[in-house]
Length: 64
Length: 161
Image 1 (cartoon, each protein chain N blue to C red):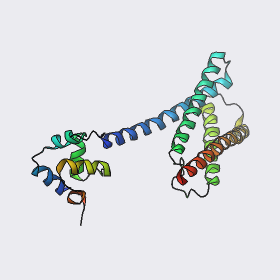
Image 2: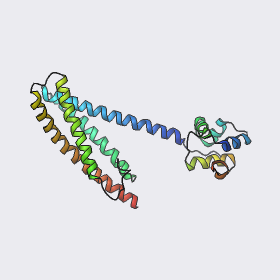
Image 3: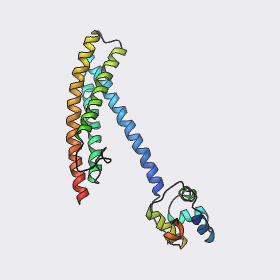
């Protein structure tokens, strides 16, 4: 299942997948797979993504 | 400020590739040893070939022990992570040793039969397989049981810590 919240948060920050990937220190493919819901990141990576986007874990990764 | 974290997905995928390569390499070395053992027992062997066989066998055993003890030092009992760590699964190792014995004994006979060097008929084949089976079963069980029991104990101790 796609992570729409992540895609929206990234768009709000006007960042491309490459920008976000470079900011965190991972490959663009990893960001792409997380957004497509095809890769389940560790808490460490989730936290890094949230920090880069100025969001909390709840904002991006919590599914009600 | 950049978070200098490593790409866990790349590492994870790399480790999967290493794991598969490791098993393929070990199986390859194992079959190479079986073939060399077959040649060794039939032809005149030189000191060099015997040494090469010995070094290769030692290398395989070292890799095997390194693998299980690195896992054990991290609190993982190799091949028994699905089993409750309170009890050591002795029967599983007897079964694995039995399978190894069966594969090696039948494998050795098959190689000799296929190369046309078998001249002792069905009874000879059964006797040959039985002797090799008992021999390899005892060795496999001793190596597996001792090493896995040791790793099981280390892993259990680490888990308690």
